[in-house]
Image (tube, rainbow, N blue to C red; front, side, top):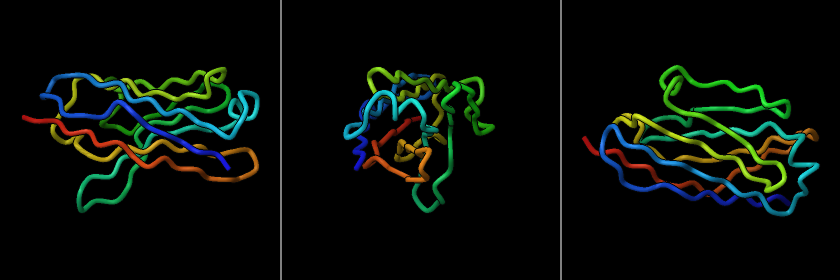
Length: 119
């Protein structure tokens, strides 16, 4: 059983930056390195949406609103996935979740971390 724990959320003014981190336990660097990892977010009253994704080969993709502002990265040795968020906007306010989709088709989620951007 993989456990994901996010950190780094908080309250920031518009235009500011935050760095989210997600540490996985119950796995190994080798297994973690084969997973596709992603950050999702869910704003009040809205559906959860994918913000950024990184494959085992380090290919990345972003939702349109995050492109150019957010950067996803991974450190397999530390079983960690991070999301650097710059130029934050009030519309980025949401609970952010990390996701680990393994090669065996298991789907793990963290408990979420709140990001609030004030105008």
